[in-house]
Length: 97
Picture 1: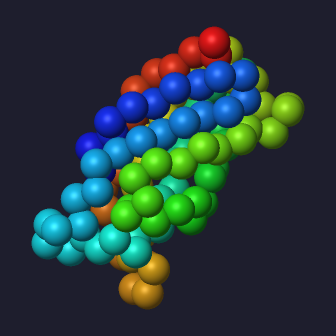
Picture 2 (picture 1 turned 180 degrees about the horizontal axis):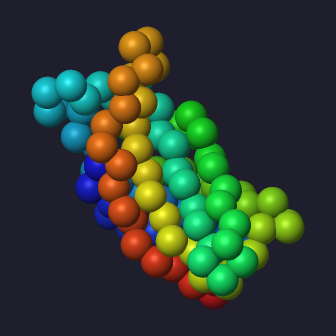
């Protein structure tokens, strides 16, 4: 995954990436999962099987109870049939706008 952009507005996380399904072991149907961690609150939240690699972007909504003032993000893709996962990628640190 090569993230093209990550933003956080309130509890809405926007993630965009370049579809690299032309590469070996990558398919447009692979499912995206995003892991968020707030180090101050020591809380994590998982968005599992959100959209496909071929979608290229997604809007994710954190629950109201999750603190979004500072969030570290990781993402991975999983093959929908075999369950094999790509190496996770650190998407960076975002702060609530």
